[in-house]
Amino acid sequence: MEMTGGQALAAQLVREGVTTLFGLPGVQLNAAFDGLYEQRERLRLVSTRHEQGTTYMADGYARSRGEVGVAMVVPGPGVLNAGAGLATAYGCSSPVLLIAGQVPSAYIGRGLGQLHEIADQSGVLSGLTKWTAMARQPQEIPELVQAAFRQLRSGRPRPVALEVPPDILAARAEVRLLDPVPKTGLRTAPDPAVLRDAAALLKGAQHPVIVAGGGVLASGAWAELAALAERLQAPVVVTRNGWGALDSRHPLCLNSMGGSRVLPDADVVLAAGTRYVGAEAMAAERARVVLLNADPHDLGDPRHPALAMEADARLGFVALAGELEGLPRRPGPWCDLDAVRAACAELIQAVQPQARFLQALRTAIPDDGFLVSELTQVGYMTEIGYPIHQPGTLLKPGYQGTLGYGFPTAIGVKAGSPDRAVVSITGDGGFGWALPELATAKRFHIASVTVVFDDKAFGNVKRQQKEGYDGHVYGSELTNPDYVRLAEAFGIRGMRADSPEALEGALKEALADGGPVLISVPVGEMPNPWPLLGVRPLAMARR
Image 1 (cartoon, one colour):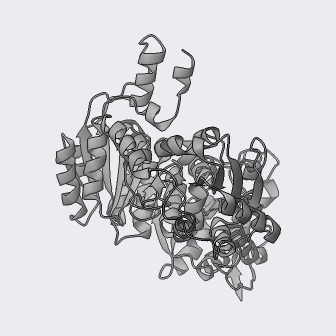
Image 2 (spheres, helix red, strand yellow):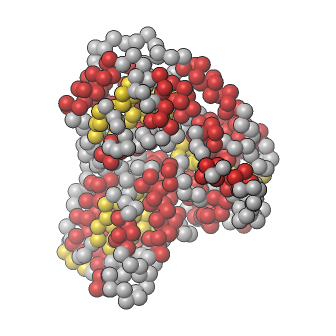
Image 3 (cartoon, helix red, strand yellow):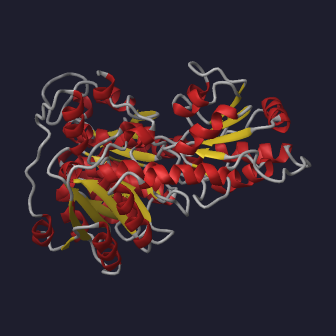
Protein backbone atom coordinates (compact mmCIF):
# COMPACT_ATOMS: atom_id res chain seq x y z
CA MET A 1 0.00 0.00 0.00
CA GLU A 2 1.09 3.61 -0.40
CA MET A 3 2.49 5.18 2.74
CA THR A 4 5.24 7.43 3.98
CA GLY A 5 8.54 6.10 5.24
CA GLY A 6 7.49 7.11 8.75
CA GLN A 7 4.27 5.14 8.46
CA ALA A 8 6.16 2.13 7.12
CA LEU A 9 8.64 2.32 10.00
CA ALA A 10 5.94 2.38 12.68
CA ALA A 11 3.85 -0.33 10.99
CA GLN A 12 6.80 -2.71 10.61
CA LEU A 13 7.80 -2.17 14.26
CA VAL A 14 4.29 -3.20 15.26
CA ARG A 15 4.56 -6.30 13.05
CA GLU A 16 7.79 -7.21 14.86
CA GLY A 17 5.91 -7.14 18.16
CA VAL A 18 7.12 -3.78 19.49
CA THR A 19 4.63 -2.35 22.00
CA THR A 20 6.74 0.37 23.67
CA LEU A 21 9.18 2.88 22.19
CA PHE A 22 11.34 5.36 24.13
CA GLY A 23 12.04 8.49 22.11
CA LEU A 24 12.43 12.24 21.76
CA PRO A 25 10.96 14.14 18.80
CA GLY A 26 12.79 16.61 16.59
CA VAL A 27 12.57 18.15 13.18
CA GLN A 28 14.30 15.24 11.39
CA LEU A 29 11.85 12.79 13.01
CA ASN A 30 8.55 14.58 12.47
CA ALA A 31 7.36 12.11 9.83
CA ALA A 32 8.44 9.18 12.03
CA PHE A 33 6.47 10.52 14.98
CA ASP A 34 3.46 11.06 12.75
CA GLY A 35 3.73 7.36 11.84
CA LEU A 36 3.88 6.49 15.55
CA TYR A 37 0.76 8.59 16.11
CA GLU A 38 -1.17 6.38 13.70
CA GLN A 39 -0.06 3.28 15.66
CA ARG A 40 -0.66 4.83 19.12
CA GLU A 41 -3.25 2.24 20.10
CA ARG A 42 -0.76 -0.59 19.52
CA LEU A 43 2.60 1.06 20.18
CA ARG A 44 3.06 3.22 23.29
CA LEU A 45 5.45 6.16 23.12
CA VAL A 46 7.38 7.08 26.29
CA SER A 47 8.98 10.45 25.58
CA THR A 48 11.98 11.19 27.76
CA ARG A 49 13.60 14.44 28.88
CA HIS A 50 17.09 13.63 27.58
CA GLU A 51 18.32 11.39 24.76
CA GLN A 52 20.47 9.34 27.13
CA GLY A 53 17.24 8.26 28.78
CA THR A 54 15.92 6.71 25.56
CA THR A 55 18.59 4.02 25.28
CA TYR A 56 18.93 3.45 29.02
CA MET A 57 15.20 2.88 29.28
CA ALA A 58 15.20 0.65 26.21
CA ASP A 59 18.02 -1.37 27.78
CA GLY A 60 16.13 -1.79 31.06
CA TYR A 61 13.00 -2.77 29.16
CA ALA A 62 14.93 -5.32 27.09
CA ARG A 63 16.83 -6.97 29.92
CA SER A 64 13.85 -7.24 32.25
CA ARG A 65 11.46 -8.64 29.64
CA GLY A 66 13.85 -10.65 27.49
CA GLU A 67 12.57 -8.74 24.46
CA VAL A 68 13.87 -6.03 22.14
CA GLY A 69 13.93 -2.50 23.53
CA VAL A 70 13.49 0.30 21.00
CA ALA A 71 14.69 3.91 21.17
CA MET A 72 14.48 6.81 18.73
CA VAL A 73 16.54 10.04 18.63
CA VAL A 74 17.48 12.86 16.27
CA PRO A 75 20.88 12.79 14.57
CA GLY A 76 24.14 14.30 15.77
CA PRO A 77 23.84 15.39 19.41
CA GLY A 78 20.84 13.11 19.85
CA VAL A 79 22.87 10.09 18.74
CA LEU A 80 25.85 11.14 20.85
CA ASN A 81 23.67 11.59 23.94
CA ALA A 82 22.12 8.16 23.36
CA GLY A 83 25.58 6.65 22.93
CA ALA A 84 26.16 5.96 26.64
CA GLY A 85 23.05 3.79 26.75
CA LEU A 86 24.11 1.98 23.59
CA ALA A 87 27.56 1.34 25.07
CA THR A 88 25.94 -0.08 28.21
CA ALA A 89 23.66 -2.32 26.17
CA TYR A 90 26.66 -3.46 24.12
CA GLY A 91 28.65 -4.32 27.25
CA CYS A 92 25.70 -6.14 28.82
CA SER A 93 24.61 -8.10 25.70
CA SER A 94 21.24 -6.37 25.60
CA PRO A 95 19.02 -6.36 22.46
CA VAL A 96 18.36 -2.65 21.86
CA LEU A 97 17.33 -1.10 18.55
CA LEU A 98 18.20 2.57 18.09
CA ILE A 99 16.38 4.34 15.29
CA ALA A 100 18.48 7.39 14.49
CA GLY A 101 17.56 10.39 12.43
CA GLN A 102 19.93 11.77 9.80
CA VAL A 103 20.43 14.93 7.79
CA PRO A 104 18.68 14.98 4.38
CA SER A 105 19.99 12.31 2.04
CA ALA A 106 21.54 14.72 -0.45
CA TYR A 107 23.70 16.27 2.28
CA ILE A 108 25.01 13.18 4.11
CA GLY A 109 28.79 13.17 4.29
CA ARG A 110 29.25 16.55 2.59
CA GLY A 111 30.01 18.63 5.68
CA LEU A 112 27.74 21.51 4.67
CA GLY A 113 26.64 22.39 8.18
CA GLN A 114 23.18 20.85 8.18
CA LEU A 115 21.29 20.94 11.49
CA HIS A 116 22.66 18.27 13.90
CA GLU A 117 25.21 17.09 11.34
CA ILE A 118 28.28 15.23 12.58
CA ALA A 119 30.99 13.62 10.51
CA ASP A 120 30.45 9.92 9.83
CA GLN A 121 27.49 9.29 12.11
CA SER A 122 27.28 5.78 10.69
CA GLY A 123 30.84 5.16 11.81
CA VAL A 124 30.05 6.43 15.30
CA LEU A 125 27.12 4.02 15.53
CA SER A 126 29.10 1.09 14.15
CA GLY A 127 31.45 1.35 17.14
CA LEU A 128 28.53 1.00 19.55
CA THR A 129 26.50 -1.71 17.83
CA LYS A 130 26.84 -5.13 16.21
CA TRP A 131 25.05 -3.96 13.02
CA THR A 132 24.00 -0.66 11.50
CA ALA A 133 22.26 0.28 8.27
CA MET A 134 20.69 3.28 6.55
CA ALA A 135 17.45 3.47 4.58
CA ARG A 136 17.86 5.07 1.14
CA GLN A 137 14.21 4.87 0.05
CA PRO A 138 10.87 4.27 1.82
CA GLN A 139 10.42 0.82 0.26
CA GLU A 140 13.57 -0.42 2.06
CA ILE A 141 12.37 0.39 5.55
CA PRO A 142 10.38 -2.81 6.32
CA GLU A 143 13.24 -4.96 5.01
CA LEU A 144 15.80 -3.09 7.13
CA VAL A 145 13.64 -3.26 10.27
CA GLN A 146 13.27 -6.99 9.67
CA ALA A 147 17.05 -7.32 9.19
CA ALA A 148 17.63 -5.42 12.44
CA PHE A 149 15.39 -7.83 14.35
CA ARG A 150 17.12 -10.80 12.79
CA GLN A 151 20.42 -9.44 14.11
CA LEU A 152 18.90 -8.81 17.52
CA ARG A 153 17.57 -12.36 17.80
CA SER A 154 20.59 -14.26 16.49
CA GLY A 155 24.12 -14.74 17.74
CA ARG A 156 25.16 -12.68 20.71
CA PRO A 157 22.39 -10.20 21.62
CA ARG A 158 23.76 -6.69 21.26
CA PRO A 159 22.34 -3.34 20.12
CA VAL A 160 21.80 -2.44 16.47
CA ALA A 161 21.05 0.88 14.77
CA LEU A 162 18.97 1.96 11.81
CA GLU A 163 19.44 5.45 10.35
CA VAL A 164 16.58 7.02 8.40
CA PRO A 165 17.01 10.45 6.76
CA PRO A 166 14.07 12.88 7.07
CA ASP A 167 13.33 12.97 3.34
CA ILE A 168 13.00 9.17 3.33
CA LEU A 169 10.67 9.30 6.31
CA ALA A 170 8.49 11.92 4.60
CA ALA A 171 8.47 10.43 1.08
CA ARG A 172 5.48 8.40 -0.09
CA ALA A 173 5.82 5.13 -1.99
CA GLU A 174 4.24 1.73 -2.54
CA VAL A 175 5.51 -0.24 0.47
CA ARG A 176 5.09 -3.93 1.30
CA LEU A 177 5.14 -4.78 4.99
CA LEU A 178 6.86 -8.04 5.91
CA ASP A 179 6.22 -10.96 8.23
CA PRO A 180 7.96 -10.64 11.60
CA VAL A 181 11.27 -12.31 12.38
CA PRO A 182 10.68 -15.45 14.49
CA LYS A 183 11.62 -15.07 18.16
CA THR A 184 13.20 -18.52 18.35
CA GLY A 185 15.31 -20.78 16.19
CA LEU A 186 17.99 -18.24 15.27
CA ARG A 187 20.60 -19.01 17.93
CA THR A 188 23.81 -20.95 17.32
CA ALA A 189 23.93 -24.63 18.32
CA PRO A 190 27.24 -26.28 19.28
CA ASP A 191 29.37 -28.21 16.82
CA PRO A 192 28.71 -31.94 17.49
CA ALA A 193 32.39 -32.91 17.49
CA VAL A 194 33.39 -30.18 19.95
CA LEU A 195 30.35 -31.03 22.03
CA ARG A 196 31.38 -34.68 22.37
CA ASP A 197 34.92 -33.70 23.38
CA ALA A 198 33.62 -31.22 25.95
CA ALA A 199 31.28 -33.82 27.44
CA ALA A 200 34.17 -36.29 27.67
CA LEU A 201 36.22 -33.78 29.64
CA LEU A 202 33.34 -33.15 32.04
CA LYS A 203 32.69 -36.88 32.45
CA GLY A 204 36.29 -37.46 33.48
CA ALA A 205 36.50 -34.49 35.85
CA GLN A 206 37.01 -35.13 39.55
CA HIS A 207 36.69 -31.47 40.57
CA PRO A 208 34.42 -29.84 37.95
CA VAL A 209 33.36 -26.19 38.27
CA ILE A 210 30.98 -24.16 36.11
CA VAL A 211 31.63 -20.44 35.71
CA ALA A 212 28.43 -18.65 34.62
CA GLY A 213 28.61 -15.13 33.19
CA GLY A 214 26.21 -12.53 31.88
CA GLY A 215 25.71 -14.49 28.67
CA VAL A 216 23.72 -17.05 30.66
CA LEU A 217 21.30 -14.28 31.62
CA ALA A 218 21.19 -12.92 28.06
CA SER A 219 20.37 -16.41 26.79
CA GLY A 220 17.70 -17.06 29.43
CA ALA A 221 19.55 -20.26 30.29
CA TRP A 222 19.10 -20.34 34.07
CA ALA A 223 16.99 -23.51 34.22
CA GLU A 224 19.37 -25.33 31.89
CA LEU A 225 22.35 -24.14 33.96
CA ALA A 226 20.81 -25.52 37.14
CA ALA A 227 20.00 -28.84 35.50
CA LEU A 228 23.54 -29.31 34.16
CA ALA A 229 25.14 -28.30 37.45
CA GLU A 230 22.95 -30.75 39.37
CA ARG A 231 23.84 -33.60 37.00
CA LEU A 232 27.55 -32.90 37.52
CA GLN A 233 27.17 -31.78 41.16
CA ALA A 234 29.55 -29.03 40.12
CA PRO A 235 29.86 -25.76 42.05
CA VAL A 236 28.58 -22.84 39.97
CA VAL A 237 30.67 -19.71 40.30
CA VAL A 238 28.49 -16.84 39.10
CA THR A 239 30.53 -13.88 37.90
CA ARG A 240 29.82 -10.34 38.96
CA ASN A 241 28.17 -9.62 35.60
CA GLY A 242 26.22 -12.87 35.72
CA TRP A 243 25.01 -12.62 39.33
CA GLY A 244 21.44 -13.88 39.29
CA ALA A 245 21.98 -16.59 36.68
CA LEU A 246 21.35 -19.09 39.50
CA ASP A 247 19.20 -18.64 42.60
CA SER A 248 21.51 -17.59 45.44
CA ARG A 249 19.83 -20.21 47.64
CA HIS A 250 20.75 -23.05 45.28
CA PRO A 251 23.11 -25.43 47.12
CA LEU A 252 25.65 -25.26 44.26
CA CYS A 253 25.69 -21.46 43.86
CA LEU A 254 28.76 -19.37 44.74
CA ASN A 255 29.51 -15.70 44.20
CA SER A 256 32.81 -14.50 42.79
CA MET A 257 34.34 -14.45 46.27
CA GLY A 258 33.47 -18.09 46.72
CA GLY A 259 34.91 -18.81 43.29
CA SER A 260 38.33 -17.65 44.42
CA ARG A 261 38.22 -20.41 47.05
CA VAL A 262 37.22 -23.37 44.85
CA LEU A 263 38.64 -22.59 41.41
CA PRO A 264 42.31 -23.19 42.36
CA ASP A 265 41.41 -26.87 43.01
CA ALA A 266 39.28 -27.34 39.88
CA ASP A 267 40.52 -29.80 37.27
CA VAL A 268 37.92 -28.95 34.58
CA VAL A 269 36.11 -25.62 34.24
CA LEU A 270 33.13 -25.01 31.97
CA ALA A 271 33.07 -21.22 31.47
CA ALA A 272 29.79 -20.20 29.84
CA GLY A 273 28.66 -16.79 28.70
CA THR A 274 31.69 -15.04 30.16
CA ARG A 275 34.67 -13.21 28.68
CA TYR A 276 36.79 -15.28 31.08
CA VAL A 277 39.68 -12.86 31.37
CA GLY A 278 39.32 -11.79 35.02
CA ALA A 279 39.74 -13.21 38.49
CA GLU A 280 38.03 -16.52 37.68
CA ALA A 281 40.48 -17.27 34.87
CA MET A 282 43.49 -16.44 37.04
CA ALA A 283 42.21 -18.55 39.94
CA ALA A 284 41.67 -21.60 37.70
CA GLU A 285 45.01 -21.49 35.91
CA ARG A 286 45.69 -25.20 36.58
CA ALA A 287 42.34 -26.41 35.21
CA ARG A 288 41.45 -27.59 31.72
CA VAL A 289 38.95 -25.03 30.46
CA VAL A 290 35.97 -25.47 28.14
CA LEU A 291 34.71 -22.14 26.84
CA LEU A 292 31.07 -21.86 25.77
CA ASN A 293 30.15 -18.53 24.19
CA ALA A 294 27.91 -17.21 21.43
CA ASP A 295 30.58 -14.70 20.45
CA PRO A 296 33.71 -16.16 18.78
CA HIS A 297 35.65 -13.08 19.87
CA ASP A 298 35.41 -14.31 23.46
CA LEU A 299 36.83 -17.74 22.63
CA GLY A 300 40.30 -16.72 21.46
CA ASP A 301 43.42 -14.98 22.70
CA PRO A 302 44.30 -14.14 25.48
CA ARG A 303 42.43 -17.28 26.54
CA HIS A 304 44.01 -20.69 26.02
CA PRO A 305 41.18 -23.19 26.50
CA ALA A 306 41.32 -26.92 26.10
CA LEU A 307 38.16 -26.57 24.00
CA ALA A 308 36.22 -23.62 22.58
CA MET A 309 32.56 -24.13 21.75
CA GLU A 310 30.77 -21.37 19.84
CA ALA A 311 27.12 -21.67 20.83
CA ASP A 312 24.26 -20.04 22.64
CA ALA A 313 24.48 -20.82 26.36
CA ARG A 314 21.04 -22.39 26.57
CA LEU A 315 21.56 -24.62 23.53
CA GLY A 316 25.02 -25.54 24.78
CA PHE A 317 23.77 -26.54 28.23
CA VAL A 318 20.95 -28.62 26.76
CA ALA A 319 23.30 -30.39 24.37
CA LEU A 320 25.86 -31.10 27.11
CA ALA A 321 23.16 -32.48 29.39
CA GLY A 322 22.10 -34.81 26.59
CA GLU A 323 25.67 -36.05 26.15
CA LEU A 324 25.90 -36.67 29.91
CA GLU A 325 22.80 -38.87 30.06
CA GLY A 326 23.62 -42.03 31.96
CA LEU A 327 26.49 -40.46 33.89
CA PRO A 328 26.20 -41.71 37.47
CA ARG A 329 25.06 -38.88 39.71
CA ARG A 330 27.59 -37.87 42.31
CA PRO A 331 26.41 -37.94 45.94
CA GLY A 332 27.26 -34.26 46.28
CA PRO A 333 29.77 -31.57 45.31
CA TRP A 334 33.45 -32.34 45.74
CA CYS A 335 34.01 -29.50 48.26
CA ASP A 336 32.22 -28.04 51.29
CA LEU A 337 30.25 -25.23 49.70
CA ASP A 338 28.40 -24.37 52.91
CA ALA A 339 31.72 -23.59 54.58
CA VAL A 340 32.78 -21.46 51.60
CA ARG A 341 29.54 -19.48 51.69
CA ALA A 342 29.77 -18.98 55.45
CA ALA A 343 33.30 -17.58 55.14
CA CYS A 344 32.17 -15.20 52.39
CA ALA A 345 29.15 -14.06 54.39
CA GLU A 346 31.34 -13.24 57.38
CA LEU A 347 33.55 -11.00 55.24
CA ILE A 348 30.54 -9.28 53.67
CA GLN A 349 28.94 -8.59 57.05
CA ALA A 350 32.12 -6.86 58.18
CA VAL A 351 31.60 -4.11 55.57
CA GLN A 352 29.15 -1.76 57.24
CA PRO A 353 26.82 0.00 56.74
CA GLN A 354 26.66 -1.42 53.19
CA ALA A 355 25.75 -4.93 54.37
CA ARG A 356 22.88 -3.65 56.52
CA PHE A 357 21.54 -1.58 53.63
CA LEU A 358 21.67 -4.66 51.38
CA GLN A 359 19.73 -6.63 53.97
CA ALA A 360 17.12 -3.85 54.12
CA LEU A 361 16.78 -3.91 50.34
CA ARG A 362 16.47 -7.68 50.15
CA THR A 363 13.87 -7.77 52.94
CA ALA A 364 11.71 -5.06 51.38
CA ILE A 365 11.90 -6.11 47.71
CA PRO A 366 9.82 -9.17 46.75
CA ASP A 367 11.63 -12.19 45.31
CA ASP A 368 10.44 -11.29 41.80
CA GLY A 369 11.16 -7.58 42.23
CA PHE A 370 13.93 -5.85 40.27
CA LEU A 371 16.88 -4.01 41.78
CA VAL A 372 18.75 -1.70 39.41
CA SER A 373 22.16 -1.19 40.96
CA GLU A 374 24.03 2.02 40.20
CA LEU A 375 27.71 2.73 40.78
CA THR A 376 27.44 3.65 44.44
CA GLN A 377 28.97 2.31 47.64
CA VAL A 378 25.96 0.09 48.36
CA GLY A 379 25.59 -0.78 44.68
CA TYR A 380 29.08 -2.21 44.36
CA MET A 381 28.31 -4.70 47.11
CA THR A 382 25.20 -6.05 45.35
CA GLU A 383 27.50 -8.11 43.13
CA ILE A 384 28.43 -10.34 46.08
CA GLY A 385 26.10 -9.48 48.95
CA TYR A 386 22.59 -9.12 47.54
CA PRO A 387 20.89 -12.52 47.23
CA ILE A 388 19.03 -13.11 43.95
CA HIS A 389 16.03 -15.43 44.00
CA GLN A 390 14.73 -15.04 40.46
CA PRO A 391 16.92 -14.70 37.36
CA GLY A 392 17.55 -11.32 35.83
CA THR A 393 16.24 -9.35 38.80
CA LEU A 394 19.52 -7.50 39.39
CA LEU A 395 20.55 -5.09 36.63
CA LYS A 396 24.00 -3.48 36.46
CA PRO A 397 25.92 -1.52 33.81
CA GLY A 398 28.56 -4.21 33.31
CA TYR A 399 32.10 -3.29 32.37
CA GLN A 400 30.98 0.04 30.92
CA GLY A 401 30.37 1.36 34.44
CA THR A 402 28.14 4.11 33.05
CA LEU A 403 27.51 6.42 35.98
CA GLY A 404 23.97 7.78 35.88
CA TYR A 405 22.48 4.80 34.07
CA GLY A 406 20.53 3.44 37.04
CA PHE A 407 17.53 5.74 37.44
CA PRO A 408 16.47 5.90 33.75
CA THR A 409 17.15 2.19 33.31
CA ALA A 410 14.79 1.46 36.20
CA ILE A 411 12.08 3.51 34.48
CA GLY A 412 12.49 1.25 31.45
CA VAL A 413 12.29 -1.86 33.63
CA LYS A 414 9.08 -0.65 35.26
CA ALA A 415 7.59 0.36 31.90
CA GLY A 416 8.11 -3.22 30.75
CA SER A 417 7.03 -4.89 34.01
CA PRO A 418 4.40 -2.61 35.59
CA ASP A 419 3.10 -5.33 37.91
CA ARG A 420 6.47 -6.07 39.53
CA ALA A 421 8.41 -4.06 42.11
CA VAL A 422 11.29 -2.01 40.67
CA VAL A 423 13.84 -0.25 42.89
CA SER A 424 16.82 1.80 41.73
CA ILE A 425 19.70 2.52 44.10
CA THR A 426 21.98 5.37 43.13
CA GLY A 427 24.41 7.80 44.61
CA ASP A 428 23.84 11.53 44.56
CA GLY A 429 26.48 11.84 41.83
CA GLY A 430 24.92 9.32 39.45
CA PHE A 431 21.37 10.47 40.14
CA GLY A 432 22.29 13.96 38.97
CA TRP A 433 22.88 12.69 35.44
CA ALA A 434 19.22 11.93 34.80
CA LEU A 435 17.11 13.52 37.55
CA PRO A 436 14.90 15.36 34.98
CA GLU A 437 13.47 11.93 34.14
CA LEU A 438 11.41 12.35 37.32
CA ALA A 439 9.11 14.20 34.93
CA THR A 440 8.97 11.12 32.67
CA ALA A 441 8.04 8.85 35.58
CA LYS A 442 5.32 11.28 36.63
CA ARG A 443 3.92 11.93 33.14
CA PHE A 444 3.64 8.27 32.19
CA HIS A 445 2.71 6.95 35.66
CA ILE A 446 5.79 4.72 35.86
CA ALA A 447 5.94 3.70 39.50
CA SER A 448 9.60 2.86 40.06
CA VAL A 449 11.12 3.62 43.46
CA THR A 450 14.43 5.48 43.53
CA VAL A 451 16.81 5.42 46.51
CA VAL A 452 19.47 8.15 46.52
CA PHE A 453 22.39 7.63 48.91
CA ASP A 454 23.47 11.19 49.61
CA ASP A 455 27.09 11.64 50.75
CA LYS A 456 27.50 14.97 48.92
CA ALA A 457 30.35 13.59 46.83
CA PHE A 458 31.39 11.24 44.09
CA GLY A 459 32.17 8.97 47.02
CA ASN A 460 34.33 6.41 45.31
CA VAL A 461 36.48 9.05 43.61
CA LYS A 462 36.80 11.04 46.83
CA ARG A 463 38.05 7.99 48.72
CA GLN A 464 40.54 7.15 45.98
CA GLN A 465 41.84 10.71 46.01
CA LYS A 466 42.28 10.63 49.80
CA GLU A 467 43.95 7.21 49.84
CA GLY A 468 45.99 7.34 46.65
CA TYR A 469 46.90 10.99 46.17
CA ASP A 470 48.00 12.23 49.59
CA GLY A 471 44.53 13.38 50.55
CA HIS A 472 44.15 15.76 47.61
CA VAL A 473 40.35 15.92 47.36
CA TYR A 474 39.60 17.91 44.24
CA GLY A 475 36.47 18.11 42.08
CA SER A 476 34.73 15.21 43.80
CA GLU A 477 32.51 17.03 46.30
CA LEU A 478 28.93 17.99 45.43
CA THR A 479 26.23 20.48 46.29
CA ASN A 480 22.84 18.75 46.32
CA PRO A 481 19.21 19.80 46.55
CA ASP A 482 16.79 18.67 49.22
CA TYR A 483 15.71 15.50 47.42
CA VAL A 484 12.37 15.24 49.20
CA ARG A 485 11.41 18.76 48.10
CA LEU A 486 12.80 18.05 44.63
CA ALA A 487 10.50 15.06 44.27
CA GLU A 488 7.54 17.08 45.46
CA ALA A 489 8.35 19.78 42.89
CA PHE A 490 7.81 17.14 40.20
CA GLY A 491 4.57 16.01 41.83
CA ILE A 492 6.19 12.84 43.14
CA ARG A 493 6.24 11.56 46.69
CA GLY A 494 9.51 12.17 48.51
CA MET A 495 10.68 10.34 51.65
CA ARG A 496 13.77 10.39 53.87
CA ALA A 497 15.38 7.39 55.60
CA ASP A 498 18.26 7.93 58.03
CA SER A 499 19.25 4.30 58.67
CA PRO A 500 19.05 0.84 57.07
CA GLU A 501 16.07 0.02 59.28
CA ALA A 502 14.31 3.21 58.23
CA LEU A 503 15.07 2.45 54.59
CA GLU A 504 13.46 -0.98 54.89
CA GLY A 505 10.26 0.57 56.24
CA ALA A 506 10.27 3.38 53.67
CA LEU A 507 10.74 0.91 50.81
CA LYS A 508 7.83 -1.24 51.91
CA GLU A 509 5.65 1.84 52.13
CA ALA A 510 6.87 3.19 48.79
CA LEU A 511 6.31 -0.10 46.95
CA ALA A 512 2.75 -0.15 48.23
CA ASP A 513 2.18 3.47 47.18
CA GLY A 514 1.35 2.79 43.53
CA GLY A 515 3.26 5.75 42.12
CA PRO A 516 6.87 6.87 41.58
CA VAL A 517 8.67 7.58 44.87
CA LEU A 518 12.07 9.12 45.65
CA ILE A 519 13.75 8.13 48.94
CA SER A 520 16.69 10.20 50.17
CA VAL A 521 19.19 8.42 52.43
CA PRO A 522 21.80 10.75 53.99
CA VAL A 523 25.06 8.84 54.55
CA GLY A 524 28.66 9.49 55.45
CA GLU A 525 31.84 8.02 54.02
CA MET A 526 31.73 4.24 53.73
CA PRO A 527 34.51 1.64 53.93
CA ASN A 528 36.22 0.44 50.76
CA PRO A 529 34.43 -2.60 49.24
CA TRP A 530 36.98 -3.18 46.46
CA PRO A 531 39.14 -5.79 48.22
CA LEU A 532 36.14 -8.12 48.49
CA LEU A 533 35.31 -7.59 44.82
CA GLY A 534 38.79 -8.51 43.64
CA VAL A 535 39.27 -5.13 41.98
CA ARG A 536 42.24 -2.78 42.29
CA PRO A 537 41.24 0.76 41.30
CA LEU A 538 43.79 2.66 39.25
CA ALA A 539 44.51 5.05 42.10
CA MET A 540 45.51 2.12 44.30
CA ALA A 541 47.68 0.67 41.56
CA ARG A 542 49.73 3.88 41.49
CA ARG A 543 50.92 3.43 45.07
